[in-house]
Length: 116
Image (tube, rainbow, N blue to C red; front, side, top):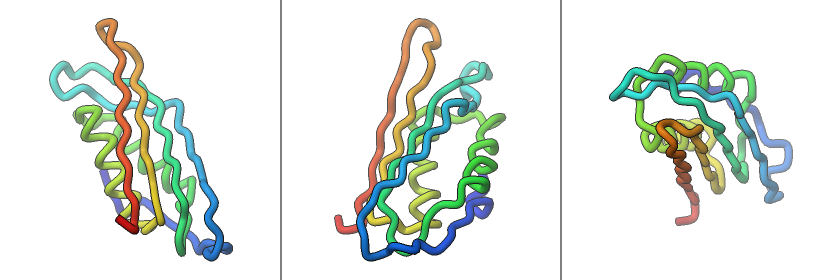
C-alpha cells in the first residue's frame, strides 16, 4: 500500500474541534492464508488539526488493498498509521467490520490520540 497516494488539504477551522467520519462499505483485501477475498466496512473518525484527508486520494489508497494478502488486524493498524502520518490529526479511530467467513465475523478498532 502506497502511503504517498494520500493527500491532505488545509483545515479551514483548525481552532475548532469537530469530527469527520468517513465510511467505505465496499473495502476488499485478500486473506493471506487462503487467498480468498475479504469484504468489510472501514470507518475512519477523526478530529483534524491543521489538515484534512482528501477523499479521492483515500479511495485510491483503499483500492491498494484489493489484491493484498493481509490480516484484518494488520489492515486496521496500517490504515491508522498511514492516515496519522499524513494528516497529524488530534485524534483518530479506525474501525474495520468484516463480513462473515466460515460463520465468523470480526471487528477491529484502533485509536490514536495526539495528546497521549
